[in-house]
Length: 130
Image (cartoon, helix red, strand yellow):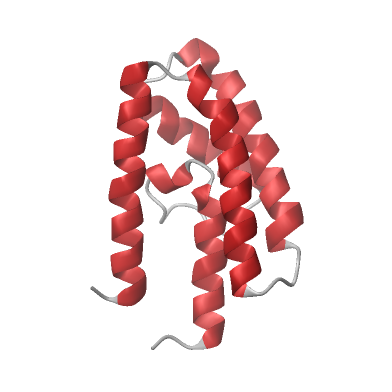
């Protein structure tokens, strides 16, 4: 089994990336990156993978930055238990999706959910080795 420090880092990284980035490749960003860098990366991935209107890129960046800052302040900068990190991250992600999903077309919402589910499975397989 993974030691406590590695497990904590993986959970923190998962939570950092949950806010929409769970849908996208996770290797290019980390909890050490600035909220601005995480938001820019997630936005670029959203534009590409969800085929977003490039004219709305600033809108999606602002949303991603808002939640990257919340995650930084409420999770990364805090000394929370793994359980607290996970639950706080899930709550933050739910709020973000309440703002994000209305901006997407039905096709984009379906693609978003499909990518999110696929990457969740990949992450869990990597985390638990199955």
